[in-house]
Length: 282
Image (cartoon, rainbow, N blue to C red; front, top):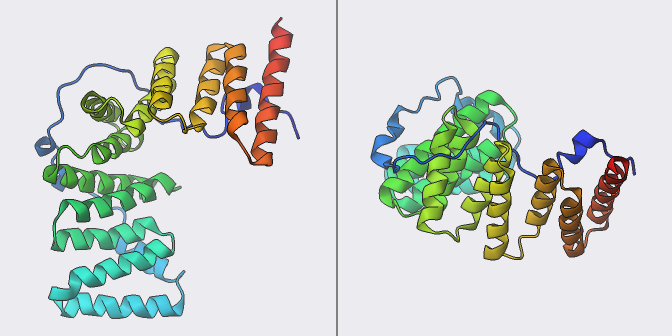
C-alpha cells in the first residue's frame, strides 16, 4: 500500500471537518420566535424541477404510483396527507432524501405536528449533508433550518432537533456562531448528549482549539464507549498537536476494535507513517 504524505496524515479518514472558522464565546439564549423561519428563500433552486428529474430515475411502476398518488392529493384534499406520505416513502426507498423531504414538507404543511415537521427536517438535513452542488446545498440547508425551527416551535426541548439545527448553521450558513450557540445550549441542558458533544469537538478542531476538542471527544467516550471512531478523531487531534506518541496510542486503540481487514491495513499504514515521521524528528 502506498505510504501517505504528511498532509494526508493530517486528514485521517473519518474525521469530519467543518467549513467555517469558529471560536467559542458565550451568547444569549436561543429564541425560536426570533428565527423568522418564514423568510427563508430558495427561489434560485426550483424543487419541482429537481423532483421531475428525480422521477426519471425511478422505475415505471414507481412513476405510475407517484402519478396516481399526486392525482389523489390534488383532487381529494382529505387524502393528501396519506398520498404525500406514500410518495415520500417511495423516494425514501430510492435513497433520495431531499425529494422525500419535499413531500414530507407537504404533509407537515397540511397537518402541522412536531413529528411531521421533524420527518421533513431529517430528510432535508440528509440531503444537505450529501449535496455536492453549492446551490442545492444552500437550498436544502435553508429548508432544513426552516423545518427544524418549526419542530422547536412545537417542542423547544427537542434537543436532537436543536443539535441538527446547530450543525446546519455551523456548516451551511454565514452565521456559524448561531450553530455554536445552539450546540452549547444542548450540552448545557444535557451534558450527555453525544451528538452535540461530538460536533462541538469537530468545531473545536476546525478552530484549532485542540485541547477543547480532546476534552469533547473524551466526554463522548465517557457517554458512549462503543463509539470507537472517536479514537481516530483523537489520534488526528494529537497528530495536529504534534504529539505523535499519543496519536499512535489512539490509532492503535481504534485499530483494536476493527474487524474489517482493509480498514485495519489502512490504520496500520497511518501508524507506520507516523512512526517514520517520529524517527526522522528524533
